[in-house]
Image (cartoon, rainbow, N blue to C red):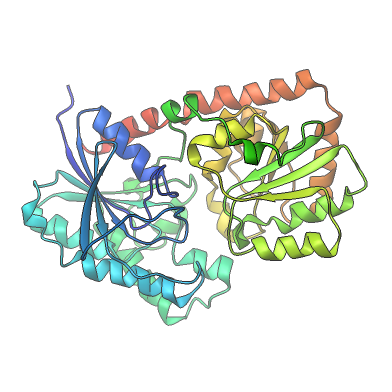
Amino acid sequence: MESKKNIWIINQYTGSPYYGMNYRSYYLGKEFIDKGDDVTIFAGSYSHLFVNHPKTKGLFTEEIIDGINYIWVKTSKYKNSKSIGRILNMIIFMINLFFFNIFKMKKPDIIIISSLSLFPILNAYIWSKIFKIEFILEVRDIWPLTLVELNNVSKYHPLVLLLGLFERLGYRKAKYVVSVLPNAKEHMINNNMSESKFKHIPNGINLEEVENYQEINDDVKKLIPQDKFIIGYLGTIGIANALEYLVMAAKELKNNNNIQFLIIGKGGEKEKLEQFCLINKLQNVIFIDPIPKIQVQGILKLLDVCFIGAHKHNLYKYGVSANKIFDYMYGAKPIIYAIDSPNDLITTAQCGIKVSAENSNDIKDAILDLSSKSKKNLEEMGRNGKRYVIENHSYTQLSAIYKKLMI
């Protein structure tokens, strides 16, 4: 029988179904608790991805969420994900964390530090030395490489050089380096990580949550046409999501009265996309505000096909593990996958069509192809995806892999 562990997770941008994204640490934490462990998550009080923000008082506020002990670390607000304020937010989180009295807590058995913010690697390293334990570095986005590739920041920029120091510290000092990206090992080895440390644990789904989903609200449901072939996107509307190519495909199909596009979420690119649709008089694109996580499977029932895309970047040679892929797959919907990446779950699971990134014509052709298929063929694709994600990507399975690293 596995021994009970006291697990500390440092993830500045951890959310929950009650506050908003990101959910990975929350789901893993719930699974660890189900296995008999104690879990404490150190998270920042402000995130641009939160729908609601926790009520905090002072530097640290404790809250129990579904058995997980959250410690909200007071951080500053910022305008958007690309602002200098966000970098200050990350630095403030690291600094404030040093003021937390760790000795009032039960000694941890393991510390997991989860990126994208790399600054708290220093906290995890120092705490691990104080308690004479190991820490695991979890990489969800490869920083600072993401800044260089997606935001065109020079690799010699002082911030990139500073983050690189923290990145290499983590690779050198962590017991294991867990990545959601299957091919990230090459980059990490080139930055002072021993090959034996690398472990791939992808993103996934919480089966309890998706099985017990909530139907969408009537005011949202009435916005969705009932008699059209609907292409849907759910998630952040940001630069990285390359949704301009989806709306360009919508422009090419605007005279097709059978096809409707649905973009659900918020983000820095939403206003620009709305303006594009307004200028081009696209009546076939509907924008809907974010819905609660628990209603995602409810809205997927009303879609025919789901879309995910990204720009062409060397960054994606390390792989992709976007959460929305797994939501789509569990929702049993065919997927149009417009990402140039070597790990292609859509082809592996035979649950959709892979097209070239940044190619609205290919997206259009995939939509026309899928819209011409029989309901039986579409349902078969959907079942393939659902079966694959249940068999390979439940957080129950993923947490069990994690637990083996803690022995």
